Length: 144
Image (cartoon, rainbow, N blue to C red; front, side, top):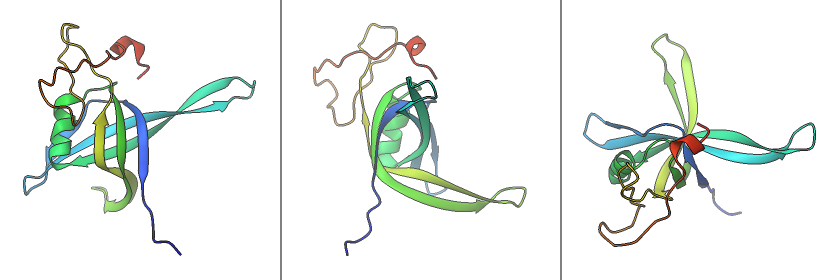
């Protein structure tokens, strides 16, 4: 029998701006929330999109890059693993969550300079590489 496999690949849009914080030892950790649509038929037989929301954590330099270059509505591709955690809340109740720990976050799309916003650089692209990336929809085009 093969060994265990814990792999997640998502392509979606950020539902909020990234939240960067640091551990007591100084390690950067960035929290992302990604919406991914699933198409299904409703009761009338029409195809509709059902959003699914995922919490993603990016550590180290990858987390710092996410906080610097990403914002609400940006499309991303996440490759990582599921991690289950449990903790005790301030009120004493036990809490649990499943999140995705990112091994890599690719920044998809991007904004061109001159559209009133800073340019977004996809992960792995060299700064000043001279590549033109297609512009993303405006914030008014994104439903969240």
